[in-house]
Length: 446
Image (cartoon, rainbow, N blue to C red):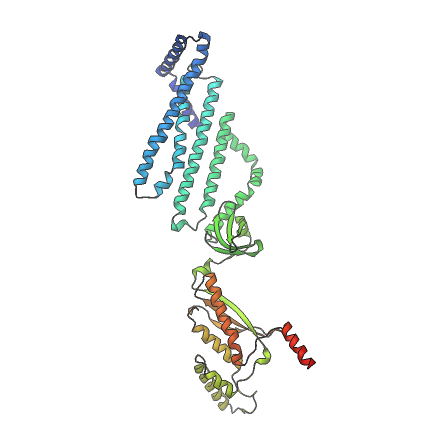
């Protein structure tokens, strides 16, 4: 950095050496003579000729800036639009090119300002003006680089392979580092100190800086972890009940992860919470072949019984149960004959139950449904009996993963299950309601 400043500082000095200094003196003398010919007092002419030349330099610099903006940049813009590529339209957009044009005027002023003060090259005023120009040049350059970073971010975020990456967090980190380094250089220019000296001093206060920028640092590190481990990306459906998040990730930045919940509210989470705490990402389900349905119905245990010949005859009329009932009945009869079972006592031997036949019916029913993914787990099972009956759980995967359609498929299945249960001489367990108690009261009165 020090070498760069030395190179920059040699430019205006060179301009006041030799012939260039003679040109400056000649311009000064010409302006002075013009002022005198206009009747200006000699003392005042000697005082204001420097500032008139300075105004001329500023005017030329502004004119050059205008030419650059109106002619050169418009020409570049037309050439860019004629190309087939889209990335150059973004990189060379109006915001980036406008920041480029803003550097033209201060650079020309910085280079030519010694011409206005050829006899005061080392004066404090000239040094102050040059430092102001240098600071302005640096500030505009920082804005130019920041706009260029944003343009590059827009180019890559539009590509399919980078849409799931936290590019905005990386953009904000790069811009933060850029402006931090720029601020150090600007301060060093103001106080005429080497930037390395300031950075060394800041190293001693690193603990304070880490405390001030704690959230940004933790967010940056967490963003890298989320991306590297493929834990989260824009468009994922995540749930984090502890913090009220249940929806789609719409933005991942340096300090925040925004989630649009299904009620259209926005939940904002710090990235480090997603690393330090647990959350559920439903992206795996969305990319798989189906969405799981896992729901049970409680069967009243008092309604479970052995099947009678009449019950079996009724079940054989159910199309998807006929083969099951016949095959199972053959197995039962063969077993009872082989073991010489006395069928007069129901507890002897093997017999079918209405609950077992009902489970077989539900299994065949699910396997014949086109809305069920048959390549994934599909079963009907009993869970541990409780005081509320026997939970009969249906475990399968809906082929349609869209929320509204999924809920409709699930509801249709259980509508059918609830309606078909009485056909198997079973009852659903349900706690007594007000209507049940009123009926009991009426019977007691009668």
